[in-house]
Length: 252
Image 1 (cartoon, one colour):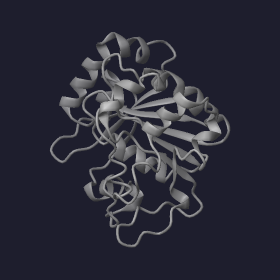
Image 2: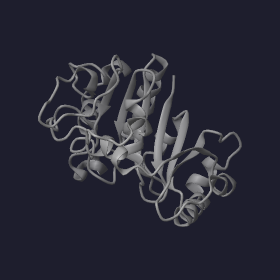
Image 3: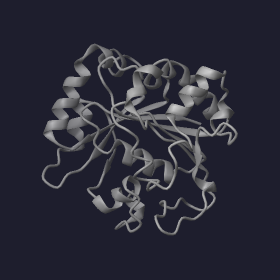
């Protein structure tokens, strides 16, 4: 079982959307962790359509639980702790429905920050969390971590270092090709992504209407390309804003 970290080096083009769609269609039980420190949770207002209280689970509750007790991997999914939201157990909500997940699929979500003012106060969380996520994956629950934009010498680098795969989202444009290339030149990432045995790092390309740089350019100059996502605003909206009528659900 695996831990996959999704991030971006140039802005955050579709990281949360891709991470959410990946979790929804993942073939095994999966935990989605929204660990973006640069923006408040978009899952609570987007995917969950503001149906849930901010106290129903989240990174802030997780950080508080860490400070109060020594957590184990199974506690992340334990309803008594209330750290994650079991999407598969949520009752139907007819007025503002949450996007459906496949029948029988088990998916938990730990939403991101509600208050960015507490980000600096939970820095120790990022060094502690990899142990739990790795143990959860070893126990049969895969983990997808949405890091959003990765800053220089980011406090969340322990999550990058311990992930089985690091997927870097970028638009298939000359701007993002240059930005990602230049970001990889900095020592914090260059020492990681360019080091021998760094096959864990991949690029996920998002196509645009106006420009499409061939995937081989990213593979040659940046990182190997894992996949290229089509330009599909309505499909993306199903994951990002809870739109119930994507043009093609299989393209999410």
